[in-house]
Each structure stands twice: as structure tokens, then as C-alpha cells.
Length: 597
Image (cartoon, rainbow, N blue to C red; front, side):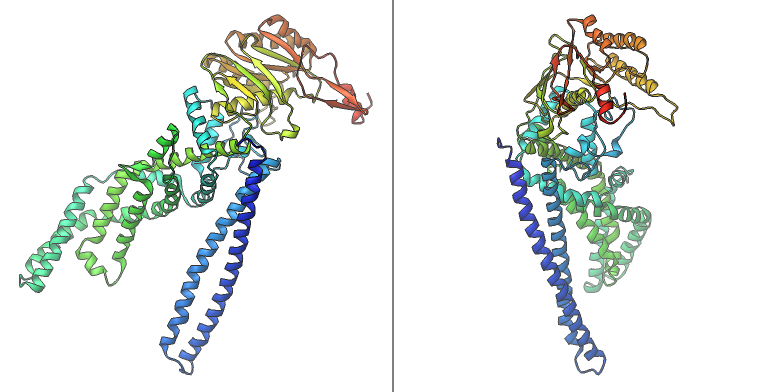
């Protein structure tokens, strides 16, 4: 899709369709509700005639009761369909919000994944309201959200990145699939308890369950034959009594296990019934990308689709529940019905229980890939980056920040690693220095997660991102801002020691101390990072720190942002220029807001 208007037009068309469907179903639900009330009143009048003056036969109650029951089922189906239509409306409305820039605060921010000690998550707005996670995340299961968060939080190796890129490219045009994942995934998130499923699947196995299930089946068959022989063949009661005695011994031996197996399977079976619909939808897809083929294969157990296995478990539990029927209970006891199906469920758990986590993880990864595919669909001009083995290198052409609307995003080229390892960025306050660092870092995160990037072109090697952009003091922790910053710098330096090629992003480095100490400390930190094979950017409004680039030349260069007066107000163009900035706007900004300086 090359037309940037196409995603919005397609979303708008589908939104109108889904909204029309939702309104139609809402009207139908209202009519059915009124009809139910009418039938109920008719039934009430008939009941008065039956039980009051006895003008009517009791049989006349059957038609209104039957019609009322059918209406209840029909109404329930319509309500569920309307709820799905409403969720589809929300899905496309949310997509349009992402396209017009009104999306912040309306989705999942991933606050559960916030880690204060992470080397770049807070600095690059990975999680929280208006974050990269909120922009990308369309996942509806906990596994999908966790997988996407993990991809954003840690760079992947080149082969893994390329595998994800191929999968995202194949999923990009499959809008119907992404809609279904969102709609069915909502039910899974609301009803499935992953931890409980995992715990149930990992319970210790009952030794010899398959053998004892066979023995129980043989005993049940012998009991049926003995009873038949006694009633019809004149064999007498002794064989039947002997078999019953054996059944009693076996039943007592496994009574506790059977009760536990049947009770423990109730909640997982309900959870899996919800998951089965989502799995069945995924199983219907045919993929070509190797990663998607592998994920699809992970949904099978011994050649049987996961949804079929779950349906089999559901049937086993329904059959086991038949023993509670009062009419069937005596026969069920003779046939060891509960024991047979309790052991059958145990055999199912031993065979498939270990796959439950794999099924959930496969669904989660497909959701994460689908989220990246949705982002790619909505930004058809964003390319996949080229991942090269040799580095460090970061060559970005016309880089923009993915969290900024296109009409507010000013693109810049950033080239690191070919010759220059460090860019020292100077400029006035509010001129765009911090945004440049976040632009570089966020695109690196997207690139190494397997997503497209906001650029015309980007080539990069595997890089470990470390940032010191948003550092605050801590009243509770008793830390000053300067102490918090040097702790973060130590984290970035340690990253350079542990990783092959870090990408460092240091904003207003050491600005919490005096100019003399800042110059010495900043120069030493940057020099140490470069000598350890790192590349990166350092911003400052202290012009004295621009000497760092001179000291490290030709491995470093100075670039800057400028501002100008426009109608008496300071204006910025947010474009990088070579060299060191020659002026400051601090006094002008102070005067502009009314301070007398």
C-alpha cells in the first residue's frame, strides 16, 4: 500500500460499516426485549387461567414457555453479537485516533512493565500514557502485551530482527485477522487466567493413568456383560457381584484423584473454551514467513490443532458431568463413569498440559507481531531498517519521532559510526536537542524490535541503547539530581563494558555541577565510551563542552540547533546544522514570559 491516505480511508469505511451493524443489532436487541416482555405477559395470563379459575389446561403453558426460552437464547446471541460489533467500532475508532494524533491516553500504556532501573525505557517514553507501547499495542491478551513489552525493552539479534520483519510484512495487509485477534482476544483477556492454566498443566502426573483408564474400561465392560448375563442369560448374580467388588476396590483407590482431576479441570476448561475460539481463528490462517509457520505449528499437538484438543477436553468434562444425572447415576456408578472420564482428563492433561504455556506464548507472539503489522499498515511510508552485522553503525536519513504527528515532526539525518562516533549537539533551550536524542533512540528500539522506523532510510548494526535524558532527584531515596545522573551514567558506562556496541544518548551531561567539573567529567565519560566502541550523541547548552568534539576529532563532530526572532517571539526550525551554536536564548525566553532581566 503506497497511498498514505489508504489506511485512514479503509479504517473510516470499516468504522461506518461496523457502526451500522452495531446500531442494527442494538435495535434488534430492543425489539427482542420488548417481545420477551410481551410473551412473558401472555404466559402470565395463561398461568392465571391455569392455576386460578382453571379455565385452561396446563398444556397451554408449554407454547409461551417454549417461545420465551427460544427468545432468551436468541436475545442473548444478539447481545453478544452487538458487543462484538461495539468492540469493532472501538477498534477502528482507535486506529483513526492513532492516525490523527489523538490517541494518547486512550489505550493500554503498559504501566505494569515500568522498570525504574531500565537503561532507556523512561528516557524514551516506552511505557505510560502517550508512550511508544500505547501507540503500538493492539494486543488483547496478557501474553501479547508482555511479548511486545519485552521486544521494546531488549534489542534482538540480527537474524531474529529479520525473521520478525518478514512476519510483520506478511501480516501487514491482513486487517481482517487483526480485527478478529482484537475482538476475540478481548474475551480471552477477560476470562482466561494464564497463571492458573500454567499451574494446572504443571501439576504432578498420576502414575499409570493410561493403564488404570484401560482397566476401568475393562471392568465397566465386564460389569455390563455380567449384568446382562444375570438378567437375560441365567448366569446368576455372583459374577456381577464379583465385578462390582473389584470396581469398588479400584474406585476407592482412585476416588481422591478423580475428584481432584474433575474439580481442577473445571476452571481451566472454561478458560480454554474462550481460548479455543482465538486458536481456531489462527489455525485457519496459512502463512509463508518462517516465523509465522513455526508459530502456527506450535498450535498443534501430535498433528492435532490446539482448538481440537481443547474441544476434546470440553467433551470429556461434559460427559463426566453426566454422572450427576439422577436417572443415569446408578448406571454411571456401575460403569465407573466418573473414574473413566476423570482418568481420561488426567491423560489429556499429561499429554497437553505442558503445551498450554506454548499455546498462550504462540498467541502472544502472534499478537505482538500483529501489533507491529498494524503500525506498519498505518504508516506505509515507514521502511524496515537494514540490519548489518558489522558495527557500530547508525545511519539514519530523514529521521522523525514516531510519537509526533507527521505535520509536527521535523526530519533530520544522523550518521554515526562510519567516521564519526559522537555528535556533540549544542543549541538554545527548547531548540530540539532532547527530541533529537529521543528520535534516534526510539527508532533504534523500533528497528531492533523488528518494526518499521520513522525515516526514509535507516541502516544500523546491533546496538545496546543506554540513555540519560529524563533523570530526576528522589526525595524518598535521598538522592540529588546530580547523584541520580551520575548513577545513570555509570549504568551507561557499564553497558559499554558488557555489550559489544552501545548507543549512548546523554542529555545536558553533568549539568548539575559547576562548569569546571562538568568539562573534565563529561570529556572523560565520553572519551571512555568511545574507546570502548560505543557511538552516540551528547547534548549541551554549555558552549565550553563543545571542546569535547575537538579533543576527540575526527571521531567526534559538533552540530547545533538555532533559533530566531519572528514577530517578536522566539521561533525554532529544529534542523541540525554543522558546528557549534553561537548564541543562547535563555535571557530572551525569560523576558518573553515576563521576568525582568
